[in-house]
Length: 506
Image (cartoon, rainbow, N blue to C red; front, side, top):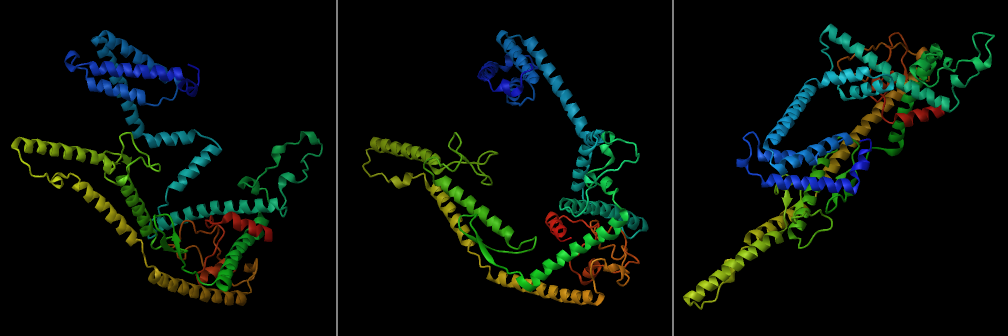
C-alpha cells in the first residue's frame, strides 16, 4: 500500500495479473445470457463497467487495490453463479456512481465560489500570482461615460492601473541603476543603529529592506524620486522613441513591401512582408498550404501499394486523415488496394459464373472481360484526387505584384505623414528649447486627464494630472500624433531592452 504508484504499475507481475483478471471477466460475461440473469441486471451494463474500470487511470495504489479486490470478488461470483451476490454488488456500484454524479454536479454548480474560497485561503506570493493571472484574463469593461458616476469610476480605475504600471517600470529602472552602481543599494550601505550602545553583532538585518519593491522604494527620498528620477525616466523613454523614429526616417526610409517565398507547402508560395499586425493574404496562404498538404496526403495514401513510412498506418491498413470525412470519428481512409481486392474477387466470381453458364448452354462466344470490370468507381476516385491536387497547385501560382504596389503606396504615404509630423515636432522642440526637466520653465500645459476621456484607454492613464505644470517632451510628441509615453502608461513591448539601454546612458 505504501509503494509508489509508478513502482507498482511498472512491474511485470502486476501487468500479467491485471490482464489475466481482465480476460477472465470478459470471457465469463460474454458467456452469460440475459435470460439466466435477474431482471435488475443488464449484461451490457456489466461488460461496459468492467471495460471502463480497467481502462481508467488511478491516482494511488489504494484505489488500484480496491478495484482489484472488486474484480476478484466479481470473478468468484461469476464462477459460482451467485446471482443474488451479483445483484447486490451491482446495486452498490450504482449507488457509488450516483453519489459521485451528485458530488460532481454540486461542484460544477458552486465552482466559482469554491475557487474564490481557495484563493482567499492562500497567502503571500501564491495568492498574488493567482490574482494577477486571473486579472489578465478578464477584459476591462469601460463604464458609461455619459454619466457622472461612469466618468468618476473610469478615472478611479485608470489612476489605479497607472499607479501599478508606473511602479513596475520604476522598479525595473532603479534595479538596473543599482546593478550598474549608478544608484546606491540601501542594503549594501554602511549601517548606523539608532541606539549608540548597540553592538554590531546584535543588529537586526530586517531593519534594511532589500530589493526594489514598493515597500523598499518607500525608504528612498520621495522628493528625489518624484521630481528627478520619474520625470527623467519618462523623458529618456520618449527620447528613445524619437531616436528610433529618426533612424527610420533618415536612414531606413519607408518600409518596403518585399515579396518572399515560403516552403511550408508542396510548392513554394509567395507572400509579402508587412509590418502590421494584420497581414493581408496570410490567411489565404495558410489555407493553400493546408490544402496542398491534404491533397498530397490523400493522393499518396490512396495510391499506396505498401505501408508508407511517413504515415501512421492502423492495424486494419487504414490511415487517419483529419477533415477527410472518412470512416468513424478518427476519419479513417483506406488505400485503393484495400477495395481492389474486393473488386477483383467480384470480377473473378462473375467471370467464373459466366463460364459455367456458357458451358452448360454450349456457347462458344468469347467472353468480354471489360463487361465485368468492377474498378470504375476506383478509377473515378483516383482521377478526382489527381484533379484536385493539380487544381491546388495551379491556385498556388499567385500574382502579388498589384497588391505589392498598392501596399508600397500606403507605406510611402505613411512615411510622408511621419516626416511631416517629425518636422513639426522638431520645430516645437526648438521653439520651446526642450531638454530633460525643461517642463519647469516650459509654457503651461493646459491638457488634463478629462480631455478626450472617451478616447482614452484604461492602460493610457498618467499617474498624476499635469495641470499647472510645463509642457514635457511627451506632451509635445502627443500633440503631433506620434508614439509617446507618460509615466503610468502600460509599457510592455521591448521594456527590458529599452530600460537597459536608458540605464547605460543615464
